[in-house]
Image (tube, rainbow over all chains, first blue to last red; front, side):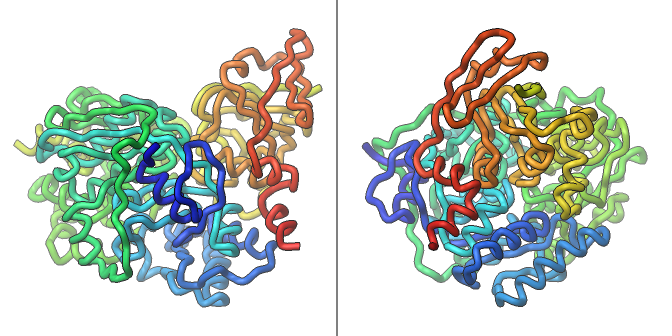
Length: 421
Length: 160
C-alpha cells in the first residue's frame, strides 16, 4: 500500500522503507523550536537528562510571546532562555531586535526545507507544512528530550485529502480557506490526522496563504498540514537562501486517506469564526449587527508582509472607526522594515491605527491589546477560545486581514468587498 | 473512591490554564488558576485522588504543558475523556499523568458519581451505578514511558 507525504517523511527519518498508520516509532528530527513560555521549562527538563545538546545548530529559541518583556516574571523567563543559549552556543537564538513571531521567522530565515521534520514546543509549529515539511507541536518535555537526543516519538497519523479546485477570488485569503475547512469538519475533525493538500487550486495560493492554512491545522485537531512543492515553493526557498540539498515529497498514487474533502475556491466568501470555537464560522457579510471595540492584525497566522499589505490596501486613505482600536503587529523585523519602506506604516498611522514591534502579545492574552469585560475584537489570530485575548467574558472573532481591516473602518464585522468598492 | 469533576466537549488549554498566567514559573502557584475561567470552584475544592471526566477533544489548543501540569499539581489522579487533543495527550503521558480515552463510554460518568479507577487493571467502576468500564492498555512503548513516570525518567533509564 502506498504512503502519504507525511508517512514518507516519517519513514525516512525513522530509517524505515514503510510505516503504517497508527504505528508508534522513534524518529530523528531536523530542527527543534521553543519560545519564551515553553523554552524555560523545556530547558529544565533537558537539564534533568544530563546530556549535551544534540546539535547547537539545530535548536531554535525565539523570545516572542511575552517579549519585549512585559513584566518581571516574563523577563526572568527570557533571561533563563538567553543564559541557556549563550552557555550552549545556540546558533539560532533570536534576540529582541532580530526576533519575530517564531512561525513567521523560521521560514523567512531559511530554516525550513521540504522533507524535513521540525518539532516545536508551540502548537502552531504545524505552519511549516506549507513548504512540504512535516512539522508539529509538542510539549516542553518532548522538546527538552529532543534537544538532548535529536529524536522524538510519533504515532504515524492517518490523513485527510483536501482537494482545492477553481480560481481564488482576489478578496479570498488563506484564512478564509482554512476557516471554511474547520467550519466544515469541526475543531476535532482532523484529530490526530494530517491535512494534505492537492488539486489545481494549490497553484492559486501564495506561500503566505499556504503558511496561514497549515498554521491552523491544529485548530481542526490536526497533527500537521502539508502542501506539495511547486514553482512558488522553489522560488521562496531560493529567495530565503536555502542551499542545503532537499527533496520534494509527494504521496504515492495508492496512498490511503481517511476522507477526502473538496473545496471550490471560486465559491468561497470571506468568513469569520465567532466565539468561542474556530469552527463557528459565518459569512462576514452577515456580521453587520456585531459592533466591535478592537481589531488586531498580526500573529503567526497573519502577520507576514502579504497580510500587512492586504490590510494596508484597505486602510490606505481611510480612517479607523472612532469606536475601534486598531492594532497592527508585523510578525518580524524584516516585515516591519519592508512595511515601512512600502509606505504601509504611514498608511496605518494616518488611518489612526497603532503599529507594534513584533510580538505574539494580544493573540494569547499576554499584553499589547487585552480586552475588557464584554469587549469584542476582530482578529487575524488563530484562536477565539473563552478568555483567549483577555477577560473571560470578552469575545474574539477570527478573520482574514482584509476582513479585519474592513471591520476596523466600519466598526462592525464587515465583508471586505463592502469597503473595497 | 474518587469524586468526579465533570466537563463537556472541547475543553481548551486556555481555560485549563489561561495564558495570562504563563509568566508564572512556579507550577504550584500557577495551579491555583487551574480551570478558573470555566470553573472557579475547581482549584479551591479539588482533593488529591479526585478524577476529571470530559467529553470530546479534551485539552485542545496550545501545546502548553502547563495544562496537564496544573491538573496534576492539583492532585487529579487521572483524566477520563471521550477523546483527547493529541498534544495534550502526549504531554500528559510524558509527565506521568494517566489519561484514559474511552469514547462514548465516558458519557456514563456523571458529576455526582463515585468512581473507582484501577489503572493497573484498566478498569473504571462507577460504584453507585454498578457499571464497570474496561479501558484499552496504552500502546507499545508509550506504556513504558507511563511506567517510568514520564519521558525524562524513561530516557534516563535507557541511558543506564
